[in-house]
Amino acid sequence: MNSWPRVFTPTVSLPKFPDLSIETAQGPRNFHPGHPVKMYVCGITPYDATHMGHAATYLTFDLINRYLTASGSEVSFVENITDIDEPLLERALRDDQDWKELAADQIALYEADMTALRIQPPKYFVPATEVMDLVSQAITKMKERGFVYTVDQDLYFDVSSFLPQLPITQEQALAVFSSRGGDPDRSGKRHPLDPVLWIANRDNEPGWESVHGFGRPGWHIECCVISLRYLNGEDFMSATSGDFLIDIQGGGSDLIFPHHFMSSAQAQAMTGQPFSYSFIHTGMVGLDGEKMSKSKGNLVFVSRLLLFGVDPMVIRMALLSSHYATDRMWSSDLLDSAQELVDALRRCLSREEVAPTTPLIQEIVAALANDLNTPQVLSLLSLWIQATESGEIGGSAGEIARALDALLGLTL
Ligand code: ZN
View 1 (spheres, rainbow, N blue to C red):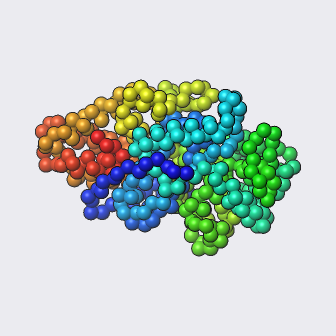
View 2: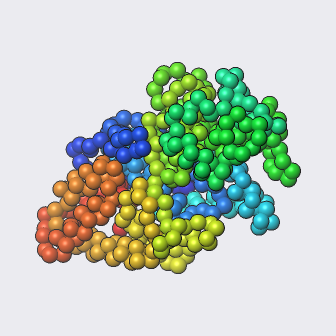
View 3: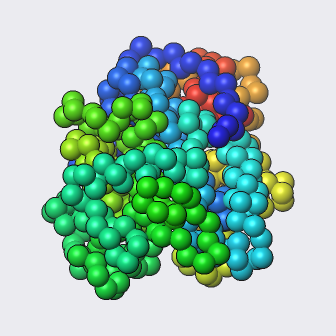
């Protein structure tokens, strides 16, 4: 599927970029300037695009993409669309809408939001409904390797040999599995945590012909095959290098288990290779002290803010004010502060003389290299604004404007 338009990125004049270091649950992961990076980010299920949690997540991976690109790395970036899944079908049924129409409307809205926020698009933007043959082949491969079994007519993945890699305890995993698409209590399963790979057709549900019967895939196998195929080419199932198949799998922290754990386990089952060098997760976004959720009806949508005339660069600045990995609260105060900072930066950038900018850019790069410390970046910008407004000179407004655009996606 065509993704949204790429935006122009100026170059950042800096002699040397430090390694980008990201703290992950597996420990610090370093990305060396100039090395190619394969990045896969889990995309939306198109029925509630694009709330602030989505925006915070895709902004984070955009910052990684921008940093690595500015430092000379070639980033292969792939994102999926989960355009066949229970929540989408349930919403379509509730609203008496065709599920394909609902998905198409929501994807268009998401693309418009990403464009407004200046998020660089992925190289491949892949809906799950376009990879049914690949999913089918992947299941066949895992079946040959002994990881697949049948309950009634549904196919399940035998996860038992990967349980030592669980990022949380088995008790914790069991507690959240059913709220995140799992069915721990289904009788006939070998292990409660085994996820479904292929769901035999149910009444009135969409399905696809395959050697495994008419049906549709489970969630995790979709991301597994899309990431492997679009980052490793058509021969992905016969990889033998022993290296990680991809460098980054990213998404919200609610994807740590089961989604990222299961896609990794299935990729290993299919290829015998380690899956991802790093798993990078973003914190959850709440509203005014409460968890933001569909059930509470308190989701804040990017498109609504834009409709009310909020500048997308102010939304972007507001999202930068918290560290990506922390759970944070969204509030109108956050937008007001971001608006003040954007206004102050614009005032400074329109001056003929500004405070020194070369050391500022070096400090911004160092803060980003240190686990994307965007709150520190905003503090550095505030200090520079103060220095400029108190009459310091010696910098170049053009130089800092280009750096803010390239590294932070802020076009002021
Ligand atoms: Zn995914």
